[in-house]
Length: 338
Image (cartoon, rainbow, N blue to C red):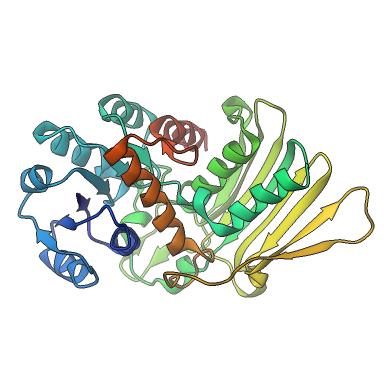
């Protein structure tokens, strides 16, 4: 099958690299308003590429497509492609910049469309889920995560993510906490109580060389699930030193799991009825290299996501980790409350 890619910037590279390893994918159809972006992305593909002149051409040759544009364009891209042909799609997170447009996207989405919550497929998360089941840890009671980057300090020019046009979807909280909020719901098997959310946020780097930053670059979101579990998530794009990376703590009924990217190939298991903590290692081998400042095994998670999605649209094989648009809409509800 041929898969279309709309928007050929940074995140599209992860999708292309993963799709090239998928045995069901025979080619890619690329479209971007920038011909240079299309050319550069086509150069990393190991399967045949069609460089499309417009979305009509992309729709005509594709069996599914991936939306990798800035957030405010997700809905209009989907709308135009679907006018030409009803194709299932993968939408990068979050679904849109506001709840109303995200709801509309869900309404028009063909069967088989998903949101790209690829963290569900990460080896770290897989290991956590396996340990919970094997050690009978029970229900999730508390989820804590610190996701700290330094991009606000290292990028000296404005990008689309710095614009208020993206509403609350592209600041540190809207961008970095999306995956973590979804993991809280996924692991805890319960949605968040949206009315109970509390947030604090700020902007440490208020201006770049070419203008003012209009979104937050650090903050906290806290709340609980309908089952009664609690979460605390800190997301920042303006941290330094030892704080950088992803640091997680999951507290279950009978024990807790801790993970830090400072020790990327192992996690710590603490059982409440045993004195010694256990270090649990896992295979560190990667099929694809990870870009700087991303969670370990980030690139490989796209391989597994596309394995499931392509099998869904080709054969109708549903997979429990695939996040349909209702999952994306719930995260959009939470972002709206920020």
